[in-house]
Amino acid sequence: MNQEQIKSLLDSQRAYFRSGETLDLDFRLEQLEKLKTSFIKYEPKIIEAAKKDMGRNEMETYLIELNWVLDELNNTINNLKDWAKEKHVKSPEIFKANESILKPEPLGTAFILSAWNFPTWQIFGPLLGAIAAGNTAVVKPSSTSAACGEVINEIVETTFSPNYIKCILGDVEMINRFLEERFDLIFFTGSPRVGKVIQLAAAKHLTPTILELGGKSPAIVDETADIEHAAKSIVRAKLFNTGQICVSVDHVYVHSSIKEKFIELCKKYMVEFYGEDASQSEDYGFIIDQRNFERLLGSLNNNGKIVFGGQSDAARRYIAPTILDDISENSEIMQEEIFGPIMPVLSFDSIEELVDLQKTKEKPLALYFFSKDKKSQDLVLAHTSSGGVTINDCMQHAASRYLPFGGVGNSGMGNYVGEATFKAFTHFKPIMIAHTSDSLDDSLSYPPYAGKVEKLKKLM
View: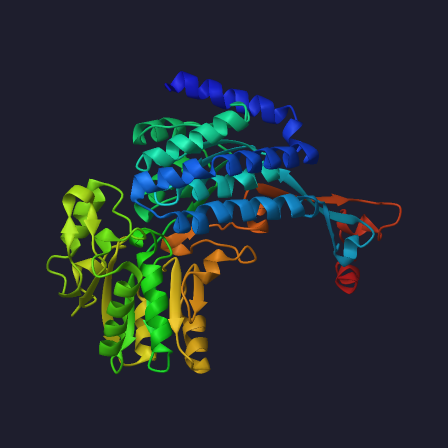
C-alpha cells in the first residue's frame, strides 16, 4: 500500500467509527462471536503455521495462542455488558447533590502490531479488546513469522470488512508508512529497541501507546527452595518455544551452596523433556530466522563455559538446550535479552546483595523467585520492580485472566488481559450532572469573595 491508499483506508475506518455503529453493545458482541467462530475454524492452520515458522509443537501453540485467545474471547463475551456500563461514583461534599459518572467510550482507530514469537495471540488478544470497547483497528503481524501472518490475514479478511478491521502484511517500510498517519492508540508487542521507535513515531501525533516489551527476566533460587521443583520449572520456562518467549527465564541466580546440584538437575530435566539429542524431539523447535540464529550462536563464544549442550545446526537453525557456567555480570550475554535456549547460571551468597544488584538494572518483564523463606519472599517483592512476579514457579502470573499483564520501565508500559484489555482501548469519560436546585449554595464560588473563605473551609 502506498501513502495515498493508507490515508484512504484510515479515512474509511474513521468514517465508519463516526457513524456510531461500533458503539452499539449488541454489535460488539456479534463481532466477538464472529471472531470466535472464525478462530475455531482456523485452529488447524494456526498450528500448522507456527510449526512452519518456528517448529513449535501443537501443545505449546494450544497453550499460549489458541487457548488464551478463546479463553479471552469467552471471558469478554460473558462480561462485556458489565464492563461497558456507566459507573456511578461519589461526588465531593460541596457537590453532593450532583451525579458523578464514568462513561466508557472507545478511543477511535487503533494500530496493533505483533512480535513474531506468538503473533496469533499478540494480534487477537489486543484486537478483541479493541472490538469490545467499540473501536476500529488496523492489525500488523510480524513479517518474520510469515506463515502465521498469512493465516492472521485470512482470518481478518474473511471475518470483517476493511473499514472496520483491516490486516496489513509487509516489512518495516510498510509499518513506517502507517506510523506517518495519526491513530488514537498504538498497541505494540516486541523489543525495547523497536518500542522506542514506535513511541517516537507516536509522539508526532500525541498518540498514546501501549508497549509490551521484554528484558532480562531473572529466576532466583535460594538455599531454602525446593531445588528439584525449581530446576524442573525453570527448564520448562527457559525452553518453552525454544526460549523465544518474552516471559522466559533469561538467566538464573542460584545460591552458591546449591549451584552445582541445581545445574545437574537442569541437565537431567533437559534430557527428560527433549531426549539426549533435542534435534530429534517433536517437542523442540528451531530459531525463527538466520539473523537470530547467528546472534544466539555468537553469544556462545567468549561467555563462560558450556557445561551442557552447545550443539547447533545452521541448516535447520537448531541450537541445543544449553547451560553456561562461569558467567559474570560483565559477560556479553548478560547485556541483552537472550531470547533463545541458552541459560546462564550465576551464583550468589546474600539475597540482600542480589536484591541491591537488581535495583541497578533495567526493570524486567518478569521475575521468578524460588524460596520457602517468607522474609526473603517479602524482601524480593518489596525491593525489586518488574512487570510481574511468580513465586516458586515460572510464567504463571502471565497466564491468569484475573491479573493484568504488562511491563514497567524498559519492559513496557500499559497492560492488558481480562478486563484490563477492555480498559486499554477505552476512555472513561468523567461526567458530572449538576442538580442546582438541590445543591449547596454555590454562590460561594462566585466573586466577590469577601467573607466567604471561612464558610467554605467549614463546608469542606
